[in-house]
Length: 206
Image 1 (cartoon, rainbow, N blue to C red):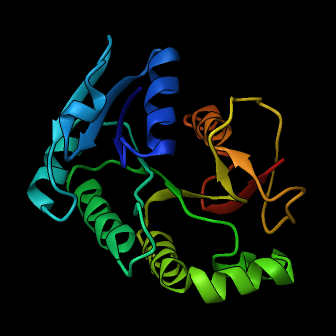
Image 2 (image 1 turned 90 degrees about the vertical axis):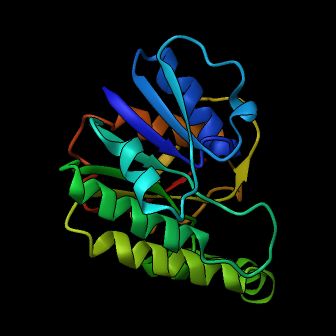
């Protein structure tokens, strides 16, 4: 398949690029700094652009079969980059008649809030309030998009190897507070051509 990956230089995005190429997909990685994906490898096209620039987002999505969105921020400052970027992605997908969309969100967003422990609720409320607001608005835009979307809610992202062993479901409780970015990428790519998770927001945990 031909897939466009946004947030391709973040931790989860890099795993998506790596694993998609390993599976033989043709990948277009949308980045601000192409030097961060210097080792391109076969099957990878690196497109430089700004997620706030609708025209460059549209160019990236032209001719794609699916879009994988792993947008994020590197600090805790208030930002709506996930929401604003995803809105632009959705618009570009509609312009180019691309239907399949995966978006990486977070456990505790939307109707998964009640699956959090009290400690994690306090953590969200005190330290990640603006991040949660961004994710909430992002998910709302995705659910209202009319696309064939899937929202992935990791229980807590860490840089560990892919195991391929994890639990997935709607509003399930986390067995641990961690899931590797590599396993999140594994879940997405396993379902790239499947229909089981279309129009579902699922938690992944281990």
